[in-house]
Image (tube, rainbow, N blue to C red; front, top):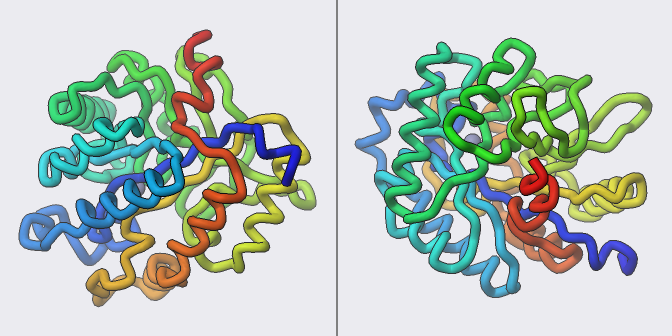
Length: 284
Ligand SMILES: [Zn+2]
């Protein structure tokens, strides 16, 4: 661990509620959202408390919906020195929209987040890492809207997202924007995702930690980790009627997430995306 203690890594949170996730989109439609009591505000406050308690800063890629419905927590993110980024407006995957719709979705979210926070939004993360070879034009939209970086690609094979042969590390895209992919480890010629999500909850902490160590041994690049406020919310209402696979992924090991997160925070050095990647972001 010693040799990694100086390397700064990025802690990121995709700020959305349990009913926004792609896993439940077949059973909860956006027209239902207004009748559901949001839990994202409380859960995000708990994460901010946790980060503050351990003296780390993180980047919160936040939905425009959250800025509209829970503005206090969005203000708190920036007031307490964390970075605010955009996660789009309503968690619609960019692969399911036209170019005009994606433009509006991202523009509106950026405007709302900037109005509420008073800060310029520099980073974007597509819902469900939904930029792939079919919609690379999303990067042009991000450039047009003034974003400096994106963290929207996952170079793995997965049933829901991912482009396995895309770059594994931070790079300048041909559109002129920095892309910071979710970290991966090459195992038997295949990339495996090690950036967070359901697998971090599913596997024992030592398995995830060993993989992160292997990543650190293999490269000098920073590591970045993502999680969601609903992942620490053991009391969230259970969604009926969703596909079994979606439910397994969403609910597995929620009760151990917070403890694992604390261990992860203590084992490495963490900062915001901007802070971690600022040399490459500012060089572009
Ligand atoms: Zn999301």
